[in-house]
Amino acid sequence: MDPTDIPAPGKEFSLKTARLLQARLGQPDEERKGTADGSPYGFTLLKYSGRPSEGVAAYLTLGLSDRELDLPGEGPVRQELLICHEEAEGWNSPSLLHYTAERLLQEGQALRQGEVLDYSETLFDGYSFEGLYCALPLFFDLTDEALPVRFLQLIPLNRGEITYIEEMGWREFEKRVEKMKGLLLDLLRGDISDD
Image (cartoon, rainbow, N blue to C red; front, side, top):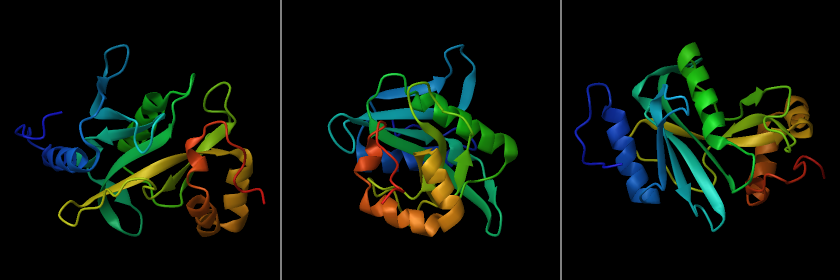
């Protein structure tokens, strides 16, 4: 990723976002611009190993923000997605980000903080997570007043956490997220909604 590249028409936000990521996270370890079968994403998936800590990886979209998405009640927004976790066998964050971002582009709808994506079945074999929670980034400061792009971190949820959010509301769950954010990197963790 060379942040000095001249952007193609319509790619101005990708270039600005790439510069922000370069300044805050450094150079990505991997870039994926398409699927295993060669079909293009329409955006790039970046992997940053060892961020925010050793043994952890952060995966981000780059280029999703080149398209405006509708956020009901707010109007058009530009958005990028990220997910962070300890490296784990059988968990495919690029696939999960690709699926989620493609869904946003097809529907033309942005995600909002506190939203739950409930898939009603486990996301990957060997893991108990059945959904994703949309939070503001927990481990990285990706805000920039000059860049009107909203980053949302996707946090894997198990059924108990989904039920907790449905019953107690996302603001109550957000308090638990803040207190237990280090635990959220563990894909084998238990239910953080349990007392």
